[in-house]
Image (cartoon, rainbow, N blue to C red; front, side, top):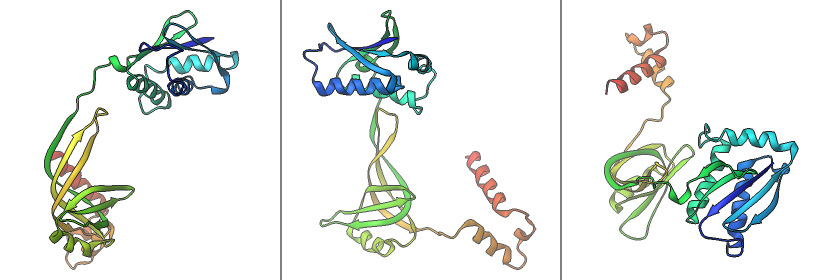
Amino acid sequence: MEYSLHIENGMTPQTIPLDQLAEYMTALAELLGEKSHVHLHEVREGCVAIAVEVDDAGAEKVDIRLESIIQSQSSTDIGRAYKRLDELLRKHNASGTLRNNNDVVVIPFPGVTAPRPITFGPIKQNGSIAGELVRIGGTDETIHLMLRDGNVTISNLSTSKAIARELAKKLFNGTIRVKGEGTWSRGEDGQWCLDRFKVTDFEELDDTPLAVTVATLRAVEGSEWRAVPDPVSELLADRRADGEAH
């Protein structure tokens, strides 16, 4: 079985940069899978067409893999491989097709011809961010901060010297919530990104686990929480209900 990737951008085998050609070969290998059974046949004239041979041992698996692309999500292995190759074509101002040995298009790659996703921003909005203060510093009137929430760090935060002096007391010292004005942008991938955040105020948050708080409440003489079999679940259910009501 033979497949060929046709790259439509005016390049020829004689003019395409070698590093670009290598990028396409790597991306094609990721798309087809079964790497030990896929071999380069030739780079054809006309447009750049990278032809590969799939030996008998891998032909059926490659066919099944390619047939699954239409139903695949971008989070799957084959979905990511398709997206990577399409983005590579867009990067080089190209579109392309994957064809079988009968020159029938198996997969189209719109590349540069696809409609560009709509981007938004920058948009300014008041809000708050919670986390542990893990860095603070600066040499001018603007002091830069870094918060950490689990494995996520947020570093594009800034504040005034006056607020920074108070915040310094909370460095590596519990969870805080900073408040202020954020500037947000939405990229072509549809994800919103925080460009910068100006901190104008902050507050300390209680890190006490919910179970400990509930146990303290149940210990209070006359507390109605003593009669609730599972107060933690009850509190969480109330929180979800409040969220749905709004």
